[in-house]
Image 1 (cartoon, rainbow, N blue to C red):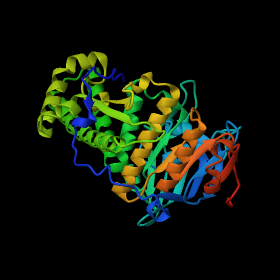
Image 2: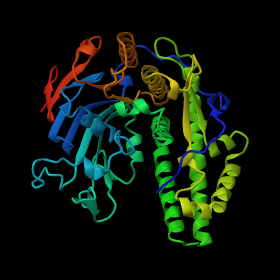
Image 3: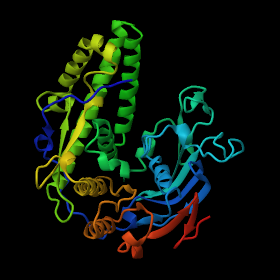
Image 4: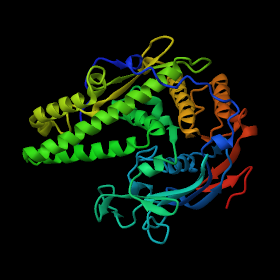
Length: 432
């Protein structure tokens, strides 16, 4: 389904959003494990290149090293799936199944992959788990893997009991990541920037994931009806009312998150530059001047008026799926897309660190940070500054690199694990 490119709208900047946020409160530099979200156990079964592995973990930074193909990013991806969404690669669930030399046997992927963890929170330990529903089996073929039994499904467990929504994960695990693929976040289309922004929203508002899921379901259903040539006005009106309601709630949550971050980033100093943030979107702009119910009515009316054109092009011309996040270098005013690779990486890190600080203030504990090959494009001064910030925030940051040398300043404070072909070789901790 083609949703089209984001509309060209006047930038809705964070400075015209609400000012009554607590983003500028100071952070306790002595943050310890009791104020930190961290995994004390991680178990993988049949996931990517991992057969069965269980890791006993410590609070604080975790450095994963090893050659290319050892499974470093796969391990981060597994952790990312303990939070709502499709993980740091946005992969199909069936593609996460382990593939060995043979597609037969108990670890061929036929039973579905599984990831489980014990999460230490300020309120005590929680057990979370997720995996592919084995009742929906992948079928290998020229189409890259079809599914039998319906659409792929992901199961979620919390404290030993199945739950019906990924939102339950977001209420326990807050997780943000940076990957090499995100180095071009500011140069490519808006969809990746929306996903990045929504991931930041989850840290403050776990219910946001449920709104996104409901919105996308209604959007797919409306597109299917229009494509099939059905014109039941009552049916379409009901779907469009749902889309409008969810879009306004999504827009409001995005606005508040950007406002919080803008306030925190306004005081950014040191080697990581201030990032100026803004939003471009219909509902986001209309909320400046109209009440939420009025914005809902306007969106629903626009959707109804666009049915004929949307039937031809697919998707919808207005809605939450067309919002874009704009980022500029705070000192120079240069749009992030025009900055150097190193400046873009520094801007991303600045946003993520500000977010981690705010989440810690709002939720009582910072998020998990997954930093894949984060040392790339960072000089020694920026690496040192990043490590200092991570230690000050008391975060369990999962950091990957081929060799330990670029992380010299972090090594005395980090748990170190070397990965090789799906096996973990501990440096400071016993693994099973």
